[in-house]
Image 1: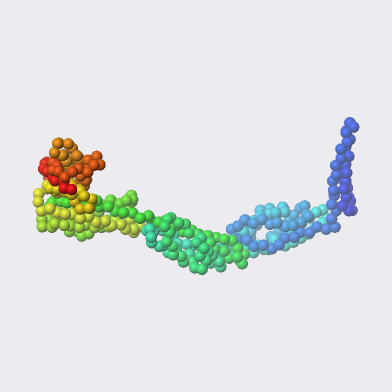
Image 2: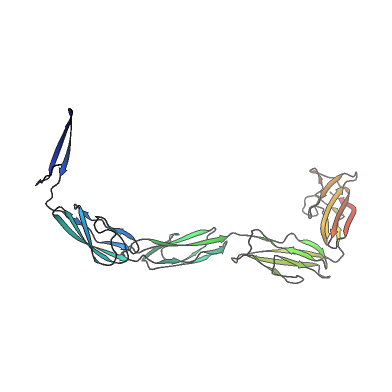
Length: 364
């Protein structure tokens, strides 16, 4: 381990021999007339972590703080770091043997730009949302590409996230900041009151409003309020007095976000006792008039069946579904003009069984 004191840069070679084997290696000792240390002033955003990067041939270093209050994590390494909170200045001493060099660096700082946008919101399908942004940055742009106004009106069809970006490129903190606003869109929905129906006067009739989506926040409003027991629920009971032959009801369902849907139902009120009426004939000629024969249920709470037989007693039609009727076909084939026998059965709202038989005429 020799010690050398070259006056100029010198390459030294070492040769090793062992039992006839020979190997060699070299080492270069650089001799400098002087060393230098260079570091430029820099900028930083407050609250950021910053590492200093001086350029120097030195092997040992010593940092000294000359202004500010942010201390370095290590003052004896080449690349110390600090957590920036304000402006700071530091002095660095670099050493290589008897060679020394010094430099000073100043860190200028600024706060991040402030930015804020409207809170998340929910709108109805087809409506608009107004977004308002604020920032103290010099430049800004929305994710939509708009960079001329901080106030934005949007009409998304689906849930959409809007982002406002801001930057002050000429400041000591030229970094981009952002904030978001989510606009949720309640998709269209419907409310259904069922098919128009027939009742008898003074028959309690329960009307149900059913929405196409599940939402516990729905409110309902029925109009008119005549003959209804309530107008602010998903259901209502109507008792129509004698003398009223037709009554319309309308319901509006409003979601918790203010979105609305409406439906209506027509009640035809028979001025008779509960009964099941069957027309005496029909003409299934596909002209859209009287093409199907079906029973008219008046004051019936339970429908058992409606059956039709031909003159040989063959069952040509049967249903247990309210509103279904016969179109004059058997197994897809049109039946000829003839007289048929029907049998219909149901129970009225007073729990009286109505069981009727009769004839109908098919005319072609």
